[in-house]
Length: 469
Image 1 (cartoon, rainbow, N blue to C red):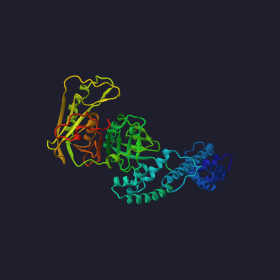
Image 2: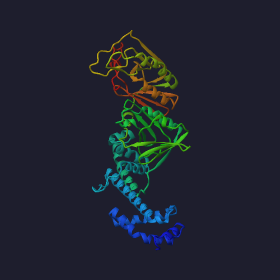
Image 3: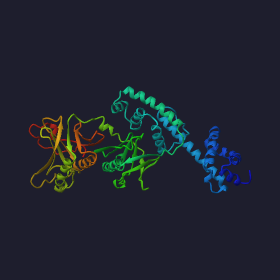
Image 4: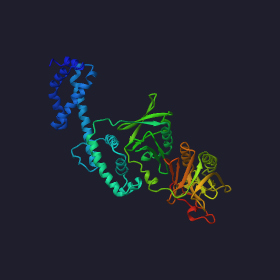
């Protein structure tokens, strides 16, 4: 081969296969030694060497300086080695998780984001029934029994499907080619609107996963701060195979557009609009939000009311001036939360929001003096018509945070003209909200209400509701 082989490089770049063969002969020796040293296996190095030269042949036209061919070839080889190591280590790690293979102690730990990327890609190749049991049991951590309850299956069926799913996943991972794990989903205007609403349901504690938005497998977007939760269906994410958690999502970052592409790779997700603009969110490693535990394992009770969205929002807005503006804290060691009493009356067909002079205060310091209750006692209430089902006799009442109720009403109001409200079966009961077919839904935990003398004929449960604020 002439000198540094520049002429052969030029000829090969023009499509001369014989010239490229000369390049292979001239560089295969040292390149083989380099790859073998990095991988520790000559047999594996031989296979990878073929991939290196194939990649070089396909990309040779992009090499501007023929004199840099050896260095350029070396960079291709190093990159191929890194991709092979990444794929192998990731496969070993995932297979160990599912009980198929033990990871050698000397094997370096793969980066977690690459594991998650590979797992998303592999799960996307499974059928729905196999993918669902893998996601619920392994990724979200539900037991066999809980997984069966959530998927409406028998426990033995879950065990059987998991066994078959692991075998299928093993085959998919073993056969998977190198890739960057980049996946793209076309979000609709409704999806973007839902993301904006979800940003209001994130927690404020930066040490908790609740500050994030979970994009769940099968096309549901979820946010929860421990006191309330919003679930928004996404047509664009219907093919999402495994949960993805977005960090640092702000409402103003979601584009006002008819649609956008969500591009998910190993470490981040980017919203890209048609005009080329984009905003990027880092991915959180988990654990995933087990929202089904509240929604699916503890379903609402047997009665419900249906309210017109416009009328419900009118009540929410009408009572607002009677909350913070009328509840100034005069005593140290106390705080005010905008608590309203929600009363559902079947016989009257009404939903009533109420507040009073002494309602919503909470002692935040143990040694705080008694609350200074000045002025005459007063109450204020507003109501709207509802269609009640299964609610007879005594009215149901519970205290909730007005700000949270407003956020739920606004979000679900964008999804439908009517909102169904169903108290849960727990004590104290959470309130379940949903619209349309139930896919747009929300959950609101009750607040502690000041204990007062129960009304004549009222049950003990209506005298006081206790929960997290």
